[in-house]
Image (cartoon, rainbow, N blue to C red; front, top):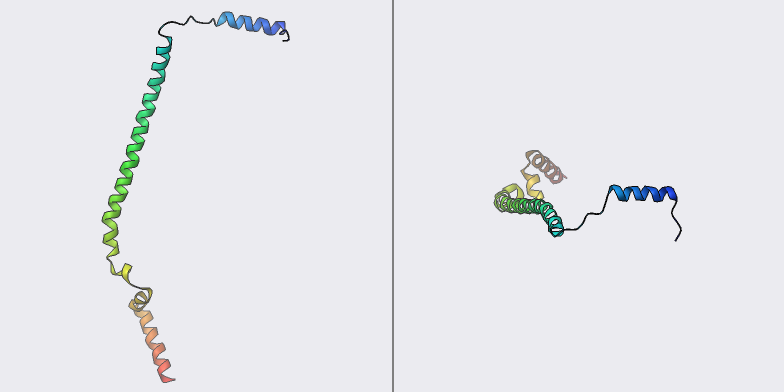
Length: 106
């Protein structure tokens, strides 16, 4: 392996002196895990809140669908055919009578 540049070697030595390796203690890993679990706790709470919101929205949509769809499907306009809707329009019915009258005279 090549020898490092003396300036780089000096820089790395200065860094090592400024940031010495800490001695691991008995509480090191439990401390790390407690910090990890603290972060996970807030994320887990947010996930539960989001899941509850999705379930509530789905339940509200199903409830509205169950209540509103039968009310609107019973209206005459939704059960009529296209021809029935055209015949209910008075202007078109008058034109239809005129065309039938013209065809009868021919």
